[in-house]
Amino acid sequence: SQKIEQNSEALNIQEGKTATLTCNYTNYSPAYLQWYRQDPGRGPVFLLLIRENEKEKRKERLKVTFDTTLKQSLFHITASQPADSATYLCALDISGGYQKVTFGIGTKLQVIP
Amino acid sequence: DGGITQSPKYLFRKEGQNVTLSCEQNLNHDAMYWYRQDPGQGLRLIYYSQIVNDFQKGDIAEGYSVSREKKESFPLTVTSAQKNPTAFYLCASSIGQGKETQYFGPGTRLLVL
Image (cartoon, rainbow over all chains, first blue to last red; front, side, top):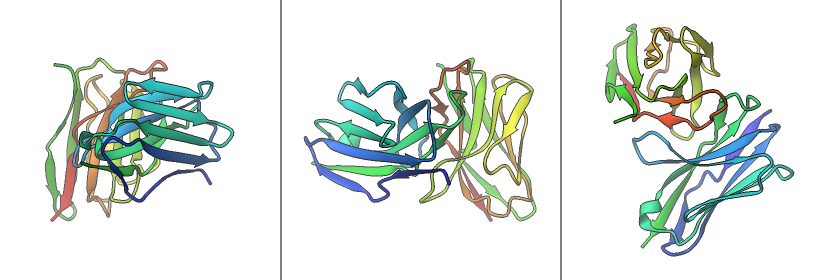
């Protein structure tokens, strides 16, 4: 069956360290993968998109990698801050690039001052 | 100020009652989506619409209905056939035409009395 896995347990890290979140998938061949941030009681907010032919994407303190052989994406936040505390969702294209995606359950990140 | 709005923020449903959740966007986006979010589960797609007057069932459409009579509006009705409606409902939109980023509304929390 098709599945997306994210670390379901919360990730606690010290302020200033790099946070690394994992998204693994099986039985998909996505054209792209996205990462979103969700705060409690709010809608998700788009952060980054990486395509199947891209290995890495950066935006300010954020970096995403995409390994289609391992079927894995890693999401890094460098120099983490307490304000980065949130749940981070990965989303895979499942429609060959026609806007239909499926979401992982998310990983809750807590940055400790 | 462009964006996507949902109302109400909280909605209470009695047994056997149909309720309608509102979703409006002024982003001029072609595609709109409804998701349901439950604790410990990822966002699950209920319905989506790529264009006015057309919509498709998602993964969990049973007990729900939608309409797309105007580009900016995509209301979701939770019918009495939906036996477990308590959840956080999120509406999203995207430009369409191969532009994948989804913009989410603030969500509606539906509770059963």
